Image (cartoon, rainbow, N blue to C red):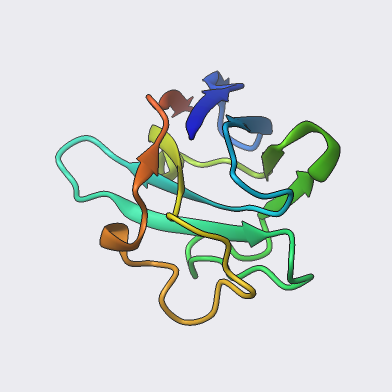
Length: 128
């Protein structure tokens, strides 16, 4: 499985960006992809998770109400719509996929060790 992120960039506070993560080589029609981010000098943190088998997606508290994750099964792509961006959202954003397909992102989606495939990351910079 290969994952490729795109859509990062530099924006001002309050603006929006949409990240894309396109996967290839999935063994099944369904898939699970999560977004993580890593700010300078900080640990990588989970942002949100999407699985084609569940309508619900969890979010980190810091992005609830501002970020929306969605997927296009026909394109093997997961999107992260990011609105009302702040400097706290600055960092490298990674998408990741587990070894299989999750029926739900559930309660363990935040664990980095559960993901075996990672993209190269895309930089998001938010400035005032």
